[in-house]
Length: 456
Image (cartoon, rainbow, N blue to C red; front, side):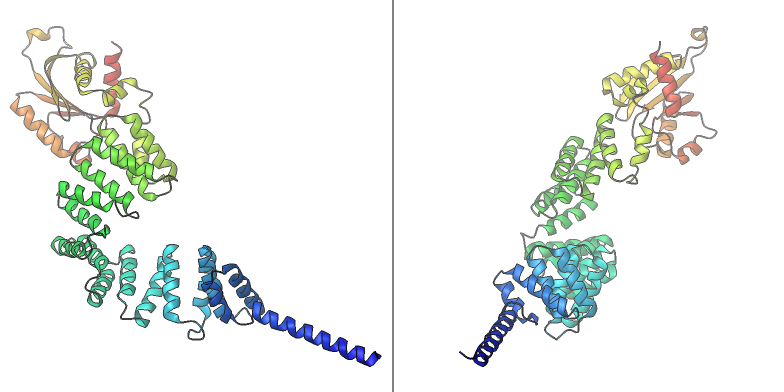
């Protein structure tokens, strides 16, 4: 074989190999994104991601490749990476060139909702409602976003538009009911919720909103049943349990309420849900009212460790911080009702040097009538009877308590009233006693009296 022949054969062989490589690359590493959808349909997400990245490395402005890379990431359960690619497309792409804008915005909108990027989601759904104006679900999602942003006027418009397009949209009727509830149009709210339940009895979000309306109307028995049904919705279960418990709290069935709040806390295995803070707060309130202050403090401390500014938790912890330092005050606040009467009697006798005439338990505490015995000759003097009222509720006493005490003082022909409150008194209560025969005994004075009586 001549040298020329060898050169020709070698050249042809190189040419064939080169063509083969080009063909294979065009098959397995195409320069355009056309092949990626087929790979995604086949479930070959890894190949789709690899090809999309290769195309983008060659041309970073191939936004069709960015789009399909985003789709591949989402399908591969890498939604955060997918959202980044969709943002690139949203900010740069000219739609219609391989990317259908309506399809893209539906997918992009869902990703924004998944990552709670509600401001961007609102912008996206505004565009989507303009491009696909006959799709009721687009208006529904935009309405829920406005509702979450407390733009009730815009949310109402969107929900009404949803129902106009689809009269049987149960969730829209339920949301419209909640919006009417927010603006205190309770009759309209109830009507929309009832419609939602008729259209879809198994849409348990509707029962949640119905329960909210019933609770607002003080229909507690009905609200409890509604919140029980609402618990079947996995997304609303935690909220529904807390609302269920709050109804029991309003009915003063504190033990039942505490069971619900404990359930809600146990559901949040990671202790990350913000709703759990409310469950802990309400549970602490139940404990406080039942005089289980150590348990209440434990819940307040758990809240404080996650959110130092949550409601009045820091104030509560400050209020009870010295309980362990003063056993007399702790007994006063946490003991049984039977023992409480004895503590109050001892405070009057030993702490205030008084002779007891009557000692009557009350739902709010204890009421005693007594006379002063500080003077050795007290028995020889006409007895001037005083009224002593011992409270141990968790909130500062208001003016109405003072008014009622003065009325009782007159009815019992007593000359002066002493009102004991470890939680203090409101400003209006303090003002009301001016020039009246009433002395307010706050926490500090009460501690002194209890300590004095306890040391005897």
